[in-house]
Image (cartoon, rainbow, N blue to C red; front, side, top):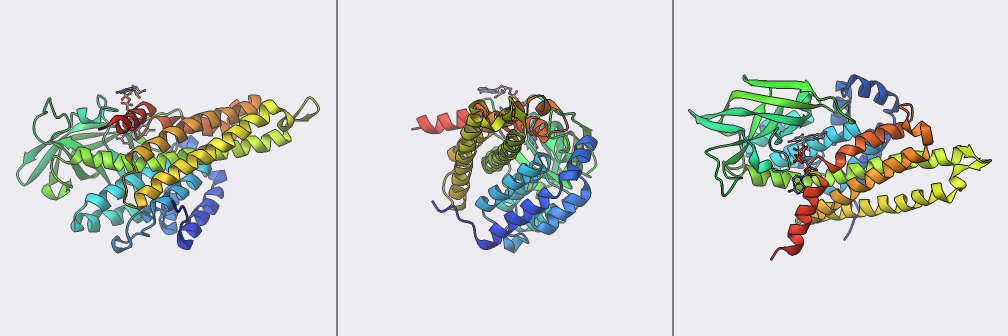
Length: 382
Ligand SMILES: Cc1cc2nc3c(=O)[nH]c(=O)nc-3n(C[C@H](O)[C@H](O)[C@H](O)COP(=O)(O)OP(=O)(O)OC[C@H]3O[C@@H](n4cnc5c(N)ncnc54)[C@H](O)[C@@H]3O)c2cc1C
């Protein structure tokens, strides 16, 4: 396994890290306002981050999954809300259009993801279909030369910023034996007639990242809105989530790393019983354990990214990385709060935000339980 990235990719990760560190003073107000400032989306575009996973022939940087993982770690270490927004747009949405889009669809939609005016959205979850995504109730009824889409999506990241969303809806009747039958992915412009974006969710964390419902009321799209094949949308969603999980694992590593860095600094400065608390084994041993776990999580993440770059199967490894890294991020952020004592519970200290933001990593793009299901299935298959 060769985990080296090329010089351009290394420079990009370093440039993103530097850019993101300089955002420090903007995070508080943006989290309070519950939005990512538009000028930052434009800056992400200029940096190349929004198109980094898109091949050069389609106007992107053609960066590897390894490089994307490194960039995600840096973004999340600085500002998890921004990292989530980018993970969805540059990861799962751009990746799905690149992989399944026709030449026309790539030419039409990829520039909309990279022009710095918006971020893509992926609308799979519904009020009654989360972990069991094949249970979606949204429908796409053939209508003239296209389809009319009806349904309600929930928890759609970036809905408010998105020029379009990849929307999953079922063509034809529910098949009780093959529940995913008929599920189809559509590229739906969010300014289309019949699309309504619900109010932004109030969340425990990731408050600057938009999470909203999407209501589709007879939204008329042409046949050219079908991404991939009619009826092949469930496989498309699962493939997108496989890759997306590497991004969430990298995000978890970044969150944990940043929270622990703050805990280490604090432990060296804070004095109790006449000495820095970092001198107590009860404080520094958890730091030692978690520093090891952060590195372990990063290695799992980069292994999954490397396998993907090699064109080899990576479903199990991505699930392992996501499971381990996201659960490690819970331990790390909570330990960072604990080491800060009462200050750790206060909004003035960033560890409070990392603990809230990191909580989502064991939930989205498949809960920990679903990762265990994916891993277990692959272990006992055949
Ligand atoms: C901040 C945020 C952003 C999101 N962004 C998006 C987005 O952009 N697009 C999108 O489509 N979705 C998005 N989601 C939705 C997310 O993917 C779902 O919340 C997640 O898949 C879990 O589904 P659910 O919430 O319906 O929980 P449920 O599926 O109802 O699960 C509830 C509990 O039951 C457990 N459970 C369920 N089935 C099993 C099983 N078979 N075995 C064991 N345990 C099980 C789960 O692990 C969980 O603990 C987002 C969610 C959040 C929190």
